[in-house]
Image (cartoon, rainbow, N blue to C red; front, side):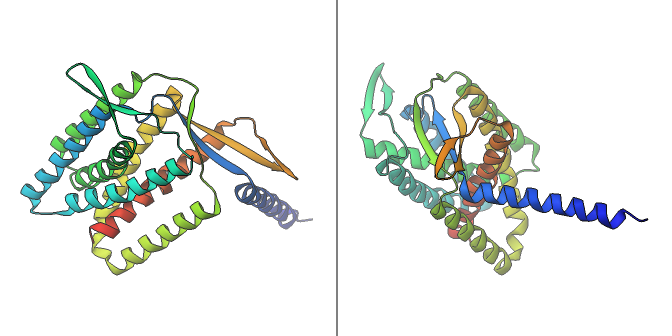
Length: 273
């Protein structure tokens, strides 16, 4: 008697059950990324990051006669400042007072100016960094500068104070968030179809973004600045699920590939093409 078809049917049945269970969890569970620690308070560093990005834009203009870095920096800074403002007004993110150190004096920055600085760093600086070094990903001299910056970033993060005060708790799988990400994926796909000559440049941009954001995520996680919390749906309520490393891995992978890589690729298609 040949048991091959029966065993194959059992395997397919089990795979379908696992797939449906995972799909059910993704739809019904709530996945949160939590940020703690000393977050967005040092205005000096944000100004220095912004000046560094501006230098990259100027260098790109003089070496390639291109305004691409300027375009993506200005456009993404504006968009991300609006996002930061929304997160603040919706109480999704608790923004602590930002300050700058000048002549050994601590000068507090007005709240909304601090939000703009945060938007410039999270949007303009990161997107400019990704595009600039993505274009030069096979140039060893630029790769050296790239990794020196990454080393500075890691050292800087390692000296930040760690605490358990929650400054931001954001659900990544709300209907509006998933709709926005889906729209970005479709828009980027349509843009790539219309402008296939930009494929390799966009691929290098994505590689640069994934690399730097993966390092930043790993360091943030091990320092305790970023955590994942899963609220599991148990009819008729949600309960906080025991922390499982696999859930953390999946959520951070989604964050890196979609909320970072796809988002900044959207900036490229919006402001560079």
